[in-house]
Length: 146
Image 1 (cartoon, one colour):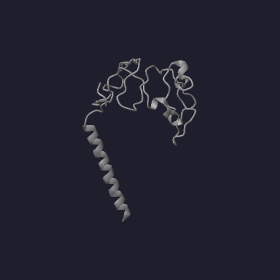
Image 2 (cartoon, helix red, strand yellow):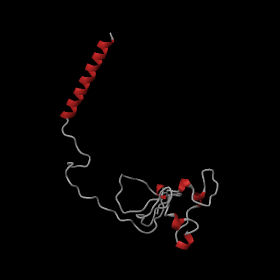
Image 3 (cartoon, one colour):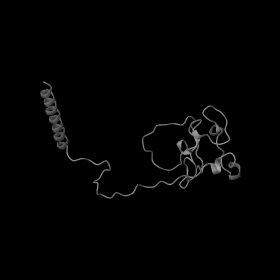
Image 4 (spheres, one colour):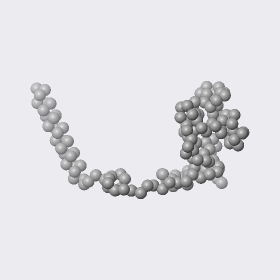
């Protein structure tokens, strides 16, 4: 009794598969997402230069954008080159803004002498500035109209 049921299921599944193949083929050739054939060489996208100088923040508590190039900066589990200028012990000598004290608090709110591990990777919140077009539409308005 089970064998005819299994055979009937296999016939049904294979006919669905074949119908899907026929449907896919009848819709025409596959369109590439890049907008051209795979063997076509496309020009490289424009490189947007980073803007220098500080930007006005759009809302309270917004992480400031990075006003300088980070191209050669190393930030990994062992090294954070941002701290060579922005750590509280170096900022005065280098003329760089000091990190907020919140960067020196652990998860329980205890004050630390070094940057907390939760704040180690600066570019999680802070990003370089560039004159590039928006990737998606945006209707954001700053909280304080300028």
